[in-house]
Length: 330
Ligand SMILES: O=C(O)CCC(=O)C(=O)O
Image 1 (cartoon, helix red, strand yellow):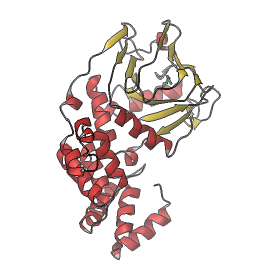
Image 2 (cartoon, protein in one colour):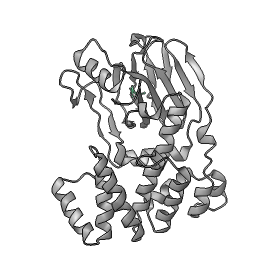
Image 3 (cartoon, helix red, strand yellow):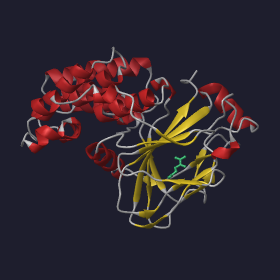
Image 4 (cartoon, rainbow, N blue to C red):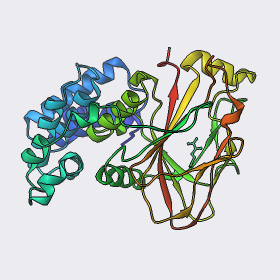
């Protein structure tokens, strides 16, 4: 939901005159890219007013704020409680999140529409334990983690991405702009702050924990889609600091230390992540993660990390791609 300034202003007018839907939409629009601290405060106040007036979506957005810890300390219990309120008022999004996060035992027991029960069954301990890793290469570090997330989380991420996927772009160091290139024939969607939800907040926290980096070092997550024949040609994820544009980017937002991939589906052939210089081709079952360092022990770009997303030869491939910086933005 990205709106022009004129539309935001007209929503503000309607919200002032007590239009609850306008309050909720205004709150959501204010959380989109480029929001200032003042936008955030206005969004919170507007969403809280919409929530008090019984809006179904506002509590789901407030749940996201609680889950990300933006504006107030992170509070998972409050976030889940707000999702239950939204679900009970009919929010399909909140219902989907609770079904994604609830335990399989509750689903098996017929509790798949029991919002409070689903919320209560969230196993927070499982999201805060380091997953087991299998090291495929020591230097540069390449490792897999089986069953990193559940099939329900994979399905949720595919559905969120499928709503607005578009051809992938590459970052141009000369102009600093994103552009389309033959090197990437696949599609991609990036999840900015306003696109987040409780499921994604948990996922991002878990990724950061599993590789021992602060959450602030995670770039916006992306979901990639490859149809048969589509690929991401061999490339590096580190910022080559010999190129002035990348040096500025690395100095501003940190070097891209690592790449964390989650395979979201199966039913495709080919489509491995290929490391030609390491003679390694990796692919994980759905929910499995593949993680690799892009820099050496001294933090310098490691050219051995050259890698490609190979084209599926049948089926389609969905992948979550998480680039990790050396620190949060300056
Ligand atoms: O699709 C793949 O397997 C690789 C993705 C990739 O290269 C990246 O996200 O940097």
